Image 1: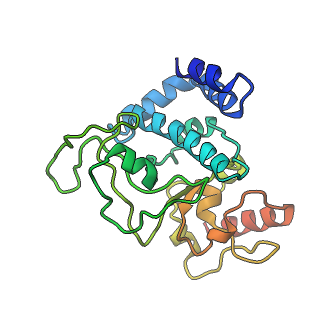
Image 2: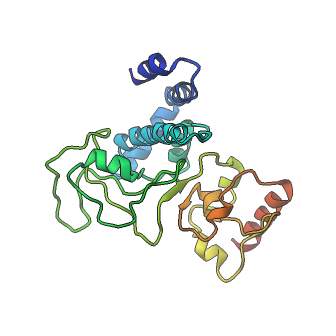
Image 3: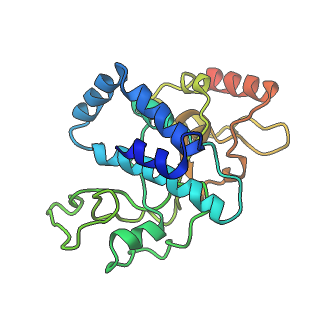
Length: 239
């Protein structure tokens, strides 16, 4: 129904309509059973509402760019499903504008709630009931954003979550999931980009990072042949 609605509102050839249709087509294959198993295996940590929120934030990012007269990123919603399958999916975060819409009578606990840059998925973890303090509680004002409740902000030191919207599948197999990037790097320096600056291994191999990353300026995926060679050599030598 949602796909039909956006098709009517935006037109069948709109980038968002096509992206949603591609994701839905992929979901109708045997991937659906795999994703269901992953959500079940995670014991409720990842919920169907998180997938809906990821779609919503893709729309939010696209229209935020348009509103700012910027070129919107390619809305590849299939990536949401691929991240689940690769076990690298992170529960989505609410940017301040949507936080206020979801919980109008609440204010974020951190001062790190300034407007996010277009194209980033930012601030706050999504839970249907807080369990961090050991006691559950519910909010009296239900969220108006995809049924989400009780969003909280991430640690200020890390900033906002940045999602790699154009992951390179070849990079995902370079670094096994059981190896931590900090342990891999140790006291060494990550490989260099041709232009200058160190590559961000988290952004390239895990598809996520933080806005306060000291290598945030190097969050790019269009690596040249020599850069790809250095990346592969570095990981092979250190893992």
